Amino acid sequence: MAKYSRKKNGQHKVIEEIRKQLVLQAERWGKKEYYTPQKLEEMVLEQCQAIKGDFLTEKANLEYEMQNIESDKKECLIKLEKLTGYLKKADRTTLIHKKAVSRFIEKLVGDRQKTQWALGKRLGQQKVSVLIGED
Amino acid sequence: MSFQLSADMPHDRLFIAARSKPRAEEEQQQQQQQQAIVPDASQATGLEWVSPQTQKAAGTEIGNNDFHIDSSLGDGDIAVISSNVPTQITPSSVQSDNPVVARMLKSFRTAYRNSKSHNLLFGQFFANVEVAALGLGLSLLGIGPAQIARIQSEVREEALAEIDNKLKQDWAYSKALFEIVG
Image (cartoon, rainbow over all chains, first blue to last red; front, side, top):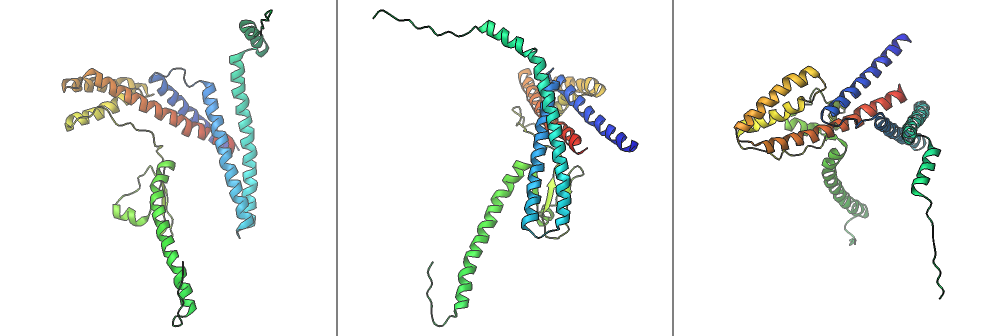
């Protein structure tokens, strides 16, 4: 168990190092503060959805294989079970990233009610006036 | 399609002849379609389908960086998946017929790119010195500052596109996959 977590930590470190290096390179090229945490989070969210799409395609393929072609049903079932687990995990991860992105947006907006109020004050309510003449 | 039935020819043969002709035509059409589709597919997906015969004829070998699936079926195709993500490479606007100048331009591009490396020692010291020296050499060979600036902007655009692609394809994808699969 300890060995597994150490391996996971190592992988996480490598991924973080790649991000740091690429963001630093972008900054050196003059794109400072372009890759904000929000943008990076959006990128990961996009990829999560892409992976989920790939899993769904694979699931459809497996189901088709099970129904139509004479194949090892047991193996297909095992694969389907695994895939269902991965799909659930993908859903969970997508939800986590969606929440993170919405948190970033909330931060930018601030208090939503106050912002709404301020916007209403600034723009004012649009009025429709009709002039009725004597004729 | 019409058939002229004669008493000399048995019906079975006629039936076979009638069926075999369109099949041959269909096969030819399929082959033509495959020839037309394969190069387009390789451009779109980054996958290159190489048959063993053409590979032998061309005398090409798969590089160390390329991940390849070799089917041991003999005549089967080999899927060559390149680890390099294809990026949009813009043709250089500044070119020269002189081989020395062309080589210098190429090394200038490389050095300028390396000068923005995340590695401080490599980027700030070696590449900057090289860029300055090569820029001086190019200006002495008749390439003006406007052209050098154009090369620099081209290299910048290429590098930024590559960084963006790497962040999206490599980093974000591996992070997402790591979180899902573990």
